[in-house]
Image 1 (cartoon, rainbow, N blue to C red):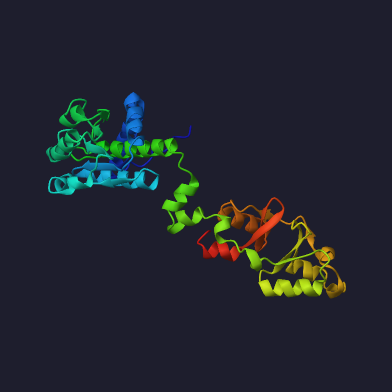
Image 2 (image 1 turned 180 degrees about the vertical axis):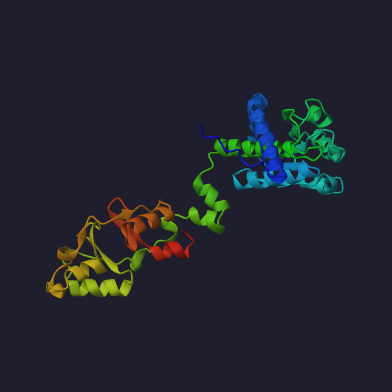
Amino acid sequence: MKVKEKSAPLSPDLEAAGRVLSIEAEALRALGDSLDDSFERAVDLLHAVTGRVVISGMGKSGHIGRKIAATMSSTGSPALFVHPGEASHGDLGMITQSDAVLCLSNSGNTNELADIIAFTRRFSIPLLAMVGRPTSSLGDAADVTLVLPTVPEACPMGLAPTTSTTMMLALGDALSVALLQRRGFSPDNFQVLHPGGSLGASLIKVSEIMHVGDELPVARPDTSMREALIVMTARSFGCVGVVDAAGDLLGIITDGDLRRHMDNDLLNRRAEEIMTRAPKTIRPGALAAEALGQMNATKISCLFVTEGRRPVGIIRVHDCLSAGVA
């Protein structure tokens, strides 16, 4: 009988990491199960705001608040973070009656938030609370209160904010995504707010980087190959599109087509005799990443961009790579 080998015991570091992640995962499941109509009322409140969502919190809650403000701002809900200490010394002026305020506090009794809370009550500014206790000064004052479930902190002493801040972060993401859906926030909107980096590049459309107008290398079906080669050389795309009298794309002549017909009295033939019919095309509204993928898959270097059958542009692999699309 074969004896099963015992696995080596985990190191203290791995054991601690596993315990923390397990506790926080359980907390997020408990948070999901605890959601009720107060979450919907919170989304209603924030969706109705004509100004910004002003977020505040002290200590670790403040760090989470900054991230929530950044996420909301990038997904269609303008938001900013106001430090509660600075608010008491003039930064309350950053909050207007068109705004709503979201305050984060695990205890719900953070002294530094008192002036912001009083300011919202004095000027009838909607106040949303995210707290860890059902009854607290912040929760009692708020128009809508989101209460985190009672779960232990992952810190072995139960002191350092760990599980509680993880739940705040996740609940902030949930609010942001719910608002995104309410507002009908689209990939187009997302690209406007994320023009930089790989994320912005992944949302670039073909219409933004395609070549148009006089740059298009096109010829009629009865054009001689001598003339077609002149167009092909002048435009520097390595191809020429063949269009009919209505301007519809019938075919394409590429370097490969030239090589295949080199011995067949090429220069004295017409474009329609040499062209490859029904070439690959792409629509202007497609993502540039889709165009790049199509070109890579078919081993071609450029695509005509068409509306219906009419070419309105041309895009090359190089155009995509230059725009950071990969």
